[in-house]
Length: 456
Image (tube, rainbow, N blue to C red; front, top):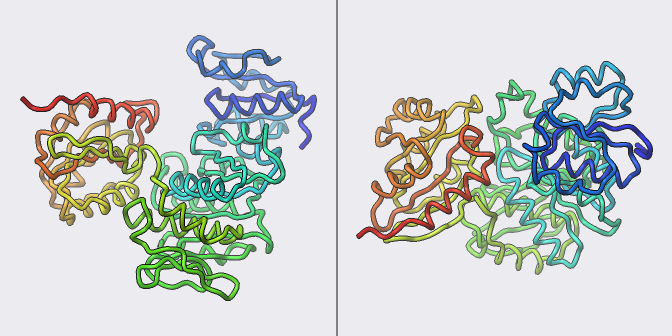
């Protein structure tokens, strides 16, 4: 779509909405920006819009601003079922999200990663691989850097690695990645999507516009993806840490193998991959498939796997104090993600759990904790604390206590731990009951830990 001189309403002034407004003004659109918060409440969030010719409508309902609009751009936090969005559609207004807008206007080769878990680590790893190969690379999307900002500066020879959420896929119609990777699908965001069938269908929209010249990459070990590869028109690559696959990446005798176009290439030994845990081996295998599809030389892939140190807030070692290691896994915002963190622990561990309720079952996590050889105690916080306690008790795990705040949780976890133990923050929940987002939760945890004083 040509947005020049079109009247466009951008609703939601978080990072993606602000970036969408910047991109649209660069395209010559007549832009109105809106948020239910006042300009004073939004504060520094609006700083990037300074100097731009925009109509600002803050602290008022978006539904009042739809008359005369050609297009409505909504942030990922706004469901496409919101009344004002439905009203816009009924009025014949073109409704899209920031991701779709940016993809329409970007230049470069688009690669996409989605899934319940592993997205951020995989896109960041892929970004490193492509940077190490000498390509100008933009790592964008749900990772926190808006796609629209990259679209402002991207060139045809660039690579764009995009982390895609199910929220963003609600409003993505022409989104067309050359290579798309689905890491896994487990129960998440049912408070928004309602059913696993809807959630899965949204994940699969990432492949909808691909054709035989594109690549679709699937995790062959994930039961949630069973049968989905048969739904795509693109060339399928698979990855597995448990078995050999027809085409893609797998492990043979503790060595990562890439099998494509009738040949096999040895990438590296599994123990040479810097980031620990079986889930990170899966992330690495998925990245190998994408890099293979993009013809990245094996030595560059190997070097990156050996040196990539992971992402902030994902099983991030913060500090060791008096023999206790404090680990920040604030990005563990759902049950499956925290299960993977639990499986990574090799020493006795006190885990901090709880947060915002996304209406998912904690029972799979409770069973994992109850059968774990390493989780010795749990400290429960947030609105889900009673739900997690009941679930843990049903699984037969009883060593737990409540805390009123994250600071108190750290102190209680420290008191329960001994030398050689870990204290692991991996909440299995979103953060919105106590924090703005998981990043703020993780930063607060790290600040608390760094300020701990040795016992007298």
